[in-house]
Length: 112
Length: 110
Image (tube, rainbow over all chains, first blue to last red; front, side):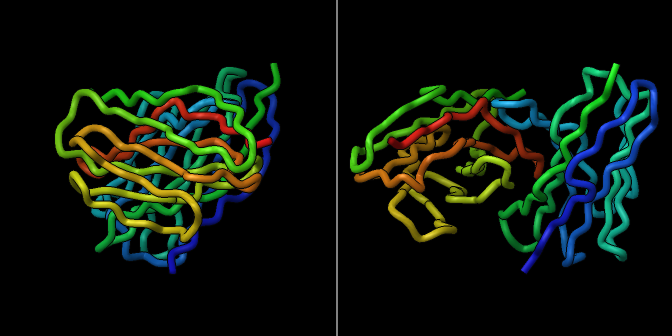
């Protein structure tokens, strides 16, 4: 059974810092790995999708990497801003199923 | 691009009352549709998913049910709510394996 873990659960950094959020999954048989952002009381916003055949994806200040063999993905945020404060979730799409397994998220606070 | 609508945005219901939450999708056809519940401080729990009209897969046995009467409409229902049904309910669709979410419904059962 696929399990997804995100470490740390919470993170507080000063504005301008580069930071890395971690996501690990137990079963490497995945179609893709997706990163989301969730603001308080809101739905999830898709940030990056990495297909199983890809190693990384980039969008602006965000870069996500995927290492299937080790069961890990990282989300790198460059030059963090207070507007980046939110909860970040990763989800693994299990191969052979329609299911997405979510981690419990990392709550990020960027201090001005 | 697809847009997901959910209503109502918030709902307060007494224990034992019925429930109907609706989700509609625009901008895509034949989507896979999902209902998730997010309890306070916890991750997303998959409740139901559907790969076509009338096709529902249940992930968690409970007093909730789902229906898909049209291609881009997904409904979550209950005949009698429990206190434990309180939470944030999210509808999602998948396009080319990427998941997109609606704004959610905050349900409080009193």
